[in-house]
Length: 190
Image 1 (cartoon, rainbow, N blue to C red):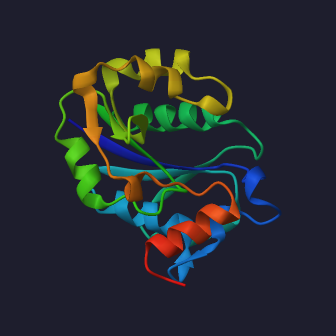
Image 2 (image 1 turned 60 degrees about the vertical axis):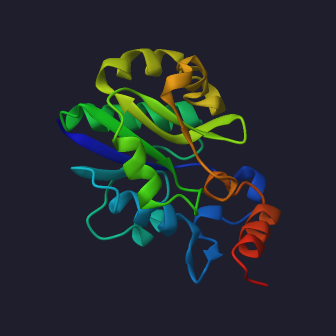
């Protein structure tokens, strides 16, 4: 069975300010490079990214292909593009990560890949990406995807046995500059 990993990295970073948060420096590298690197090490057969910025494409790891969508589209458009990419690759399942979650580890992603069916992470009682999506669920997940909530409705519909625990550090995402500063503090940096 072919496993495709896709990094969703096409957001507009509206809440972050004028700069693209995915290019913000984190531990000496662009923020997006951390989740991209973890996905590259997870053990997927094919790895790609959904992007809307040529600058983001330039900082992705070697070997990570990318598909561009028009800037300013919502999370549901990125999600559907990821599923379309997975289908083109003949995927039996799709591992999705967000580009603004720098503490996601290859170990967590490999833990998700042990699942036989769709699964999602659970962090302090909240269901969050990364998500493993079985091909049998591709269509339903796309139908439920809407606006900037993306796959949220699908994620909520998954049964309790589909939940994989994730600690609060791995679950931290960067939406505003204060989130980036907090992530650096949590990392022990000034």
